[in-house]
Image 1 (cartoon, rainbow, N blue to C red):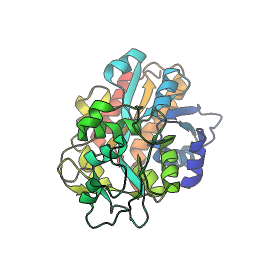
Image 2 (tube, rainbow, N blue to C red):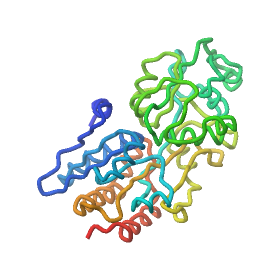
Image 3 (cartoon, helix red, strand yellow):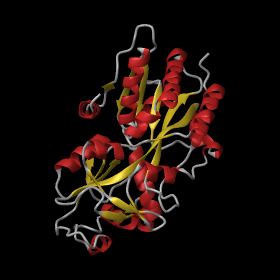
Image 4 (cartoon, rainbow, N blue to C red):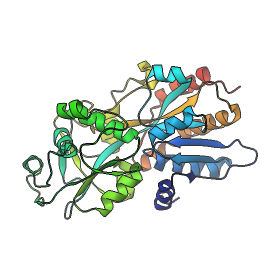
Length: 340
């Protein structure tokens, strides 16, 4: 399954990964664009192995939450996890499905992937509109060996309610008090500057087409679309690149067992090797589903993905959930989702 046709499908919001057999319930989901590349890869493999299909609308976390609340899909997908009280209010069960990294991406002539390095404060100042040109002293200080152009920075950001934005702005809030005070962290914020684009695919396309631009996307989108990612200075003051090892280092401190509703934010984690904008993506389902057959079929798919999908996730630079966590999640399914 090639990536670009999938991205075009995502751009029109409806992705029919596979047809559904007459015997199987129609598994429907909607939400985050962050995990779209791996969900599509899993769905293709699952169809080939089982004959069962999955339809997923890659429309952003905010819209995914609204669709599961409206009971129009079997599951919702969000990168901005719901807190325990919100889950309880709507009768929802939440768990993490896979982890990955969010990366700043730039379109700068002569700059190769990973060459440009930024830190959180500088990135926040770019998105606050305080740093307007690429040769600003703050950027140049971090990149003494690079000759940066004296051109205006075109800032690209999400226009839709987005879990990627939630994690990105959470990181900026931790790295910059001014950002925290003026803008804050949420799936949708009042952006001080920037051109809006819908979905990770929209931001990817906009940055690819716009010289001297900067945006933020899930790493698989940067890699598959051959975008120029930046390096980052992490909480420990070390320069790091977005790699599975760096994402794993950031995720290592997550205490999933003691997090109500598996609520974990993995930005700005300690450790010399940690990528600072690491995130998990979550699934939302009803504890008492209206369509128990479809709900049971969805759980079969997720169980299959945990059992057989790790290599596929790693090929796209996602981090599979640790075995100890998937066992906890299986227990959550058994205790909290009533499919019988």
